[in-house]
Structures are given as structure tokens and as C-alpha cells.
Length: 430
Image (cartoon, rainbow, N blue to C red):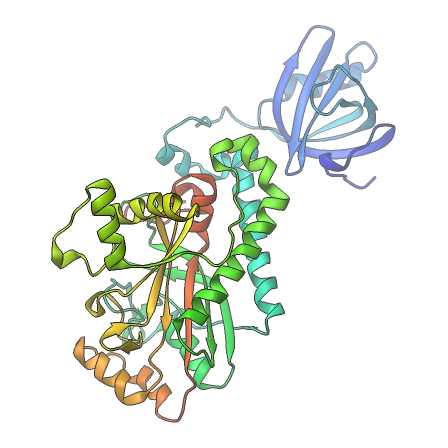
């Protein structure tokens, strides 16, 4: 008999299931075993007088043991788990579990020490069902809009982002770096005439940051496309793509999110276009409305507190969870952002008070790009990159998203919980 997932069981059928033991009540005359797999839970009811051959197995079962059961699925209105129970013919213990070292309410760092156990709950499994749907929806939308999926190297010869720390490693007789983003290679693809590309891949940032949203390794979803008129084309593409993705997540998992995480995390599918404000206008508004001030020297970029208040502002002014922020100070933006009258032609996208994207029109003109790099003292470091633009390159732009950060914001959890296995300044295991 082939194994069937619990979520597909119907009454009146012969079934074979396998999964973890979530609960067991071993009484004198009867035993009730709750078994779970990735699709759901079901009760197995053992009448000991009718099946004495099963008693030895029942007595050996512990919580989180793995078992395989064959039997008959029958309807029973008194069973809370979907009104179905299994009357077993055989119970095979695949693996006996020791007493678990953590509980669902243990401290997060203790749970991360035993991440494979922590992930067994329905609530935590939902995190990665959502990530799977997110990735599939983003990929589907881009493929339907003529994007090519490509895979750029993660061991590179120069730092790929100015202003961010990098992991350096020995590379035979020299040095190399772990890629902070696929930025340079996305633009190389534009110079190659690919026109539209995207990548879903690991990203590495050697930042000693201990916030709820930072990690030293995360999964990035990056894209770049050619023949744009200006950075507003990039913003328009992102809002369409995100709206499609969020609608897919809401349709498939919206009810589960509310059931397991609470009404406050009900998925709201955004309307388009998303609101847009300059960084200067945001500081003006949040000072007038909320009394939040920062020194003039900090007003070229959004502080973390300003990001949080931008969400409040967007809800009040536009009834919207998203906000595009534009007109940042050139000193705060990477050298490859195009500038117009000294102003970077780019944006940040804020969702629920957290930045999820930095995007822009890129500087595709060789002389201007070299001048920008020299201004930031990067001429020699990025010489290989500027060569991409010597032989003709179309105007282009793009952005990157962190899948783990998006998941975090969907569910109101920390980045440590949103990643399958978290990597931070003080964590390299498991």
C-alpha cells in the first residue's frame, strides 16, 4: 500500500500514513495517538482488546517518535480532528524519540540550537509554505514578463556593494569575497543584451548587526531590466509584481495565517499605484505630526525610527501599507545609481515600517560611472565592473528583495525565525 498524506484522507478507505506522534493517551483499554505530517493531523484509535498485538508498539511510543500506521479511515463525529479517525491493523515504529530538549515557548536562541525540532510545528512549517508560494509567484510573474533566470557567481574578486562589510576568504594565492549581491553581474547581463534577468540566490553581508531584521546570510530575489525611461518604470514593475505575489499568498494561506498568527497579520492585498514621497517630505510630515526630529546631517536617508513612522504616515495619508521613498542624498546611495542634477534616481520601498527594497535607474554611461566611482574612492576596486560599460550598454534599472525579510513582515516574526537556519555574527550552528 502506498503512503497517503493525512490531508487527503477520506472516510471508508484503507490507508497507510507516516508521521510524528504529536500526542498519545495510553489508557488501560484504549489508546489514542495523534499523528501529524506536513499536511495535517489525524487520530489513531487502538482498542486493545480487539488488537492485543498492537499493545507492545503502543507502550514503546514516545512523543515525536516517527510511526507508520496501516488501517481503515472511518468517520466519527466525536473526533475533533476533522471528524475522521484511523482504526489500525499495524503500527510500525520507525524511530523512537528521546525527551525533547526544547518547547515551542522556549527562548529563540535555545530553539535555534535544535532548529530541526523547532520547525516541526504547524506554525513554523507555515513559514516555509509561504516562502515557497512567494518564490513561485515572483518567478511566475517575471517569466510571464519575458525575464530570464540566471545564476551569478558568489565568489568574486571585488566587493559588490560600497559601504557594506564583506566576507573575505583565501582564494589560492590571493583574496576573494563572498558576494553581497548580484548587482555587478545583473548589469553585466544588461551589457550582454539579455534585457531582463532575475536571480534567487544567497547573499552575504559581514555586518555585526543584532537587530530583528539583519542576518549575515539571507536569500535575495534580484532583478534588472533594460530600456527603461527612468526609475519610475522600476517602481511600477515592482508594485505590480509584489501585488501579484501578495494576492497569491493571501489566496492560498491567508486563512492559515490568521488562524496561527492572529487577526493583526491578515494579509492585505495592496492597491496600485503605491504612494510616493520624497525623503525630505517624509521628515517634514513626521516632525509636524509626531514630533520626530533628527539632525540635518541625517536627513539624507531614513533612520530606523523614520522607517517605522513612514508606515504610520502612509496608513494615515493613503490607507496603504507601502510607501516608495525617493530623492535620497547622493552620499547615502551606491555609486552606480544614476544622478540627475545631483539627486540619485532611485528609491526605497517601505512595507509595514521596514525597508524591503533599494532600487534605482543605474548609471549606464561609462564616463559618468567612472566619475561616480572615483568620487567614492572605488576606481581601482571596481575597474573590472566599469569595463562592462565601455562597449555600449542600454539604460536599465532594478532592485533586490530579501525573501526572509518579506516572510518576517508577513507574519510579524524575527529574521531568526523566518530563515530555515539563521546565520548571524554569533551563530554558525547548526
